[in-house]
Image (cartoon, rainbow, N blue to C red):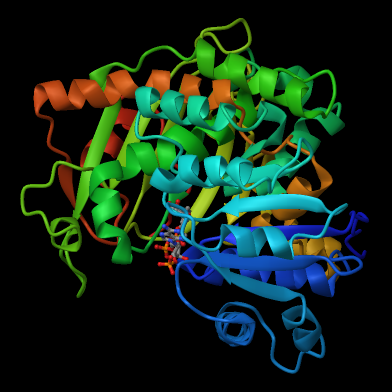
Length: 481
Ligand code: NAP
């Protein structure tokens, strides 16, 4: 099965911050792959823009190096063709340098997309510059990266600032989790099959858990992470988006505002979280790695590298069903998965010796994307009716073959920007609602002087997180030691 490439119009994609880490690791490889898939029609181009003084040839060499490191370009016959589609302009977001040069490079009649791959403090300057130098029209799009604000107030200010220069329909707030194949499959599984949706409620589902576990520490992003922590870096955006997709009502159509309206309703229906339903942690030095406090260079840091919480959605569908969310760094495995744990059958005809069994649907986002449904069957062999749970496994790689090598999230999202499809991007009110839920939790920690609990690196996090779930007679899935 060959992934279909939807034809797109000829475009110019300007990447502000085209020399940065995100460009090197994600944006440039993503566009290169789309070029190879035939999705840079005509003379479509990528124009890098940053303060570094370099010409087109130097930028091409810079991109070649980035692709050699982050995209599989060995023996590629397409690389030179892609490099030929690149241009560069030396430009300062905060001054007048380079804007006139950029204006001269733009070709009329093409789709114009401007990717703000710079720190958020420059978003307003860039939006203003695009207008001042007449670079954008009402069909142009801007893509803004996370973090979108530090709290509700800053997110609102940023929304207001962007709204001075662009309509909401032109603003693409990226959350790359939404571009993942399996995340979209979540919607396909829920709304494309008759099997699941009738059972998708508190009557049949015992609880849902979402784990996003990383083995890496904060790496070179210590200063940023010390200010953000797991709550702002992961929970407020990626985890919240996953929660929305798993819990939302079926949208009337798979269209941007239908989907985003339903996601917004989920966030707005979230109850405030009780302090004892939150566990925060910080990794300590072990197994040859530095501690979180060493990584962020603050011996008294109160920032969390791990958070687990239990929350409730107050609506008819979910009243009484807990959602357990957990994310952290330096955990035992790299794994992102959502597990929907169904209730036990109301009555077992097999007697107590058959044990208790229930169904679980696991949606694995990484490292391997796939969906598993645990079903209860008879253990093979003579000797009576003993039951076991076995997985009905649908690894996408196995089911769909090598051609299932699906586009990376950034590939999909960049092409969605070019196509003008906002379904997988966050709307202003969604982002603000997520902050409105998050802010009181963070303010509570600050008021109480809450200090995260230490946990050993490469484990499942602090013991309190395990106990929080076990007290409810349940257990976490997802991080296997
Ligand atoms: P970075 O490596 O520090 O790169 C920043 C880029 O912005 C560089 O190209 C820099 O080039 C340019 N820049 C800085 N000041 C500028 C100015 N005044 N005018 C024009 N260009 C300027 O940062 P990054 O890691 O790529 O992150 C970019 C954005 O993506 C940030 O908002 C970040 O939070 C977000 N993000 C990054 C990652 C990631 O994995 N890296 C993941 C998610 C989100 P010059 O110094 O040459 O100007």
